[in-house]
Length: 374
Ligand code: PLP
Image 1 (cartoon, rainbow, N blue to C red):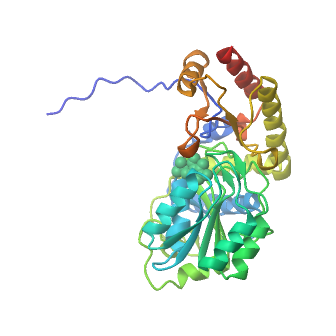
Image 2 (spheres, rainbow, N blue to C red; image 1 turned 45 degrees about the vertical axis):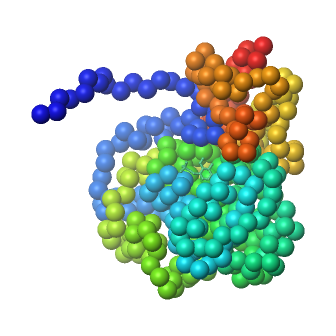
């Protein structure tokens, strides 16, 4: 008989989380996670599901009936979007200006789509003229873009311009809002975004596990009118409709504790007010950015495209980013991150998200960095 491993009760280290996510979880969210479970079809849980949907509509600024948390991390809501909207043979236009455009490409290909690109260097947003040219050349059925690129610290401006171009060509727009929802201005209905998805662990300061997704009726009609089944059973929205729609019938066992956590995190958004929350992120990130610039560090993106929730700063000459991050973790129990993909070794990524977007955290990062770089 196999013997039990010799492990102790779990005692994870305390860290200050100022990287690209997860951000620090609000104490009220942590508290609610120790609440007793109820069944996923219990009327009390159904009421919680309704409230989560209402709170998500507010946070996305949408009236979309189809607004749900997907069970899984941000990649699950991303895969739900691409896996349901993209049918085999559809042409899909995706960006090349960051790491998560690459993930969109893989997901669209796995869904059977033919992928083409709209090019922009890492560290720059998509130019609407390039998007229009790519539409004229390829006439895509689905267009995906990243609103807040966590790998580059770039905020995509002119979202309405992008959605108008797509809609003139009768295409559907999928927006990755993982690092913008609840932290940066986002108006799904006003900007005419067909599908938007996010994660919990960034500006909502919730543990990962239940990931926001919203689709308008037009997008849902495409999903429900598909000629072929969605390749994933688990993420098939036509089946999930039974659980999150009118019927509330069993599809899978919802991650109940994660739904509680998301409910509380969204409640905190509602209490603070969305615009006040966007403003707090901007103010705190400005404090961070000014502090970094005073230390002689240089932000990577142009000010125009600066993303308050993720600050990408250039690694100073002669500094080994790996050693710097290890020192910050060992000496200060502080987490920030290095660059990914094309920007590996070139930037540091400092998050300013949700409950982590507070003056004491910003001051702590600045003083720890100053000491480590001295
Ligand atoms: N999209 C963006 C922009 C992200 O930053 C992330 C995660 O960092 C994801 C998608 C994927 O989310 P997850 O890691 O929660 O699966």
